[in-house]
Image (tube, rainbow, N blue to C red; front, top):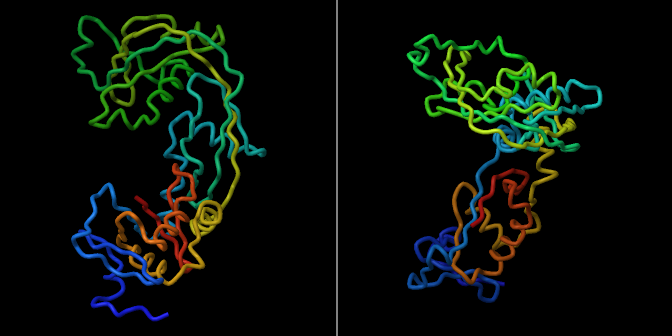
Length: 309
């Protein structure tokens, strides 16, 4: 079938920006007049940005040392175990908030799964921790405890509560909340904060903290099992794994759809409603995914991060 000639290139004719529309007529794509402009709420777009192995690694995985303290400890224990699993029990349970972690210096990628079980209620003691308190607060005979002198379980509670001790020196991070909760009577008896309930000062990594008791409440302590599975041993291998499991492959496209995709690469393709049939079908293929996961698209053997609106 021969389509009528256009006065612009096909790429320009397909674009709908600032009110240029597209329709299908006898299988050809033609332009509407500028008077057929559409509002943002009536516009659909697709854009594709090149996805390198490094970009995919950054988007879909988290470095082991980038995890919060409780999670990093539990995942490290699992990676070190012959079974690839570890189980910890505490008020602060591991929460990777990522499906994959990468270890170094040679990149190794692991899928992470966690399961909580055997929850038990106990009493927790919540304190607010103010960071970088002026040392003048230690006047009148008030003394500060050294972090290193605290019982091990109190130190773990503090590390888990802040997540990353480096935040002690972050200008924007001025306070956090910490709950001391222990099942075993011996740990409760040894704790500096249970059931003390008074304001205390703590010297931690050359920073003075003021811990003020807030409340005593019932909390739940759970056991958490962390399971790990190695899925790749290089960024390229991880790219292939993610592509196979989460990617959308754009193949068997019509000529019109290939024109749309070509324009969307490192740019944006847009149409007003009602969409042309090629664009509508393409959007449906790109929408067949989990909305919580970044859209990864393969086209002509190359990978792209997709953005659909």
